[in-house]
Image (cartoon, rainbow, N blue to C red):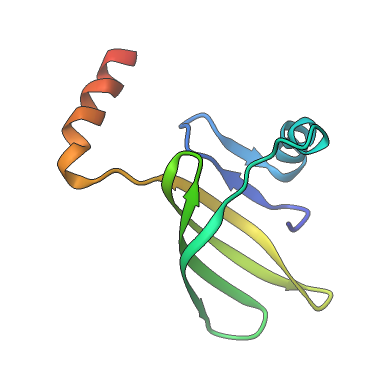
Length: 105
């Protein structure tokens, strides 16, 4: 990740700056129980050889998720500058999810 990277998680409260995100994740990785996502499909777009953006479908412990982000070339290496992780919801189940969210308020 770039030094000023941002990670947007699946919860509305998760808008992590790089330093805070690394601090949050460190115990999981140290314990050997971090997340494991497998790419199902990925699309990459770019205008030049310094910045690109992408979207992807991922197999995760939460089911199928969608990620999207921006990567930047820093010192010859591609690094994530901005990443958004979203839980996908089948259209036919969206009403149930809306009801669940209303119950949390």
